[in-house]
Amino acid sequence: MTESPSVIVTRAEPGNAATVDRAKAAGLDARAMPLFAAVPLAWHAPDPRDYDVLLLTSAQAARLAGGELAGLVSLPVHAVGAATAAAAEAVGLRVVATGASDAQALVDAMTSSEKPRILWLCGRERSDLDAKGARLVPLPCYAVDPVDPPAGWDRLIAGPAVLLAHSARGAARIATLTEGRRDRLSLVAISPAAAEAGGAGWAAVTVTDRPDDAAMVTAAHALCQKAQK
Image (cartoon, rainbow, N blue to C red):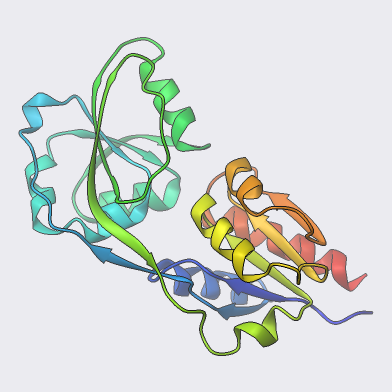
């Protein structure tokens, strides 16, 4: 039997610690290697009467929005993923829909029968979404900035290891930092876009069946078991 791969968690805190704990509880050799740090941005809540829906595509928006978020509590929230929904509810927001896929799929569902006015509380860097004729206004309230890889990064990516990419931007950063060294590395991507951003040359690539942390750890566990056979 070959050695069990390490599972490298690259997302920003506080999600990194939560993922590491979840992976360790599943019996995996999880290592915290955050490649980004999330920071709040100054922003001001608009008049909620100008909107019908508050869109959240990341738990960081709820965690880092700060006091201005109180001005938007009257808006029903559509959230991408269970973690984002839980973070929204933890700060007093009312979640009416939780998307099981990606942000575009959630917007598609919102706009399939009507054209709501959507306020998107988001990060400074974000993907483009097709509003399908609805009004979609992005409002950045946080930023996720790259940081230098923690000590031990080079040793861990010598492999074997499974790296978790919780976003397309995260996958692109992982790809940059593993260029030419992926033959003993596998990638778990939270979406097809993240898998594409991760590039080629991996020992294996798995796209999760839903965009949440539990699915990421389940996929990593499967890859680790396969590597030990």
